[in-house]
Image (tube, rainbow, N blue to C red; front, side, top):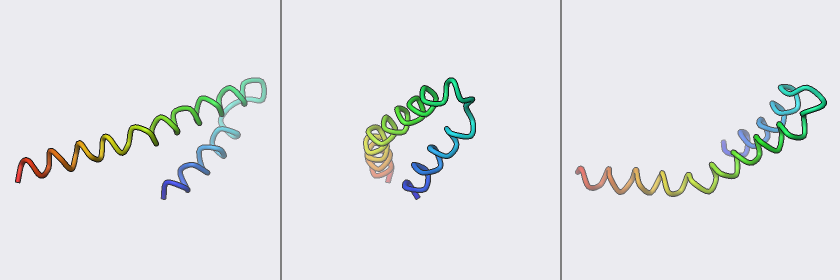
Length: 55
């Protein structure tokens, strides 16, 4: 599923932004995509840790 989101962000970036700012818009989408990839394990670990503490 993560791979599908990665591919769809490229397609969305090409269709969403006009030609003069397309590269800037695509790089902005990819930047936040990579930030999400870095942050998601920490969020998941935090969720699992707090869930176990509540049991």
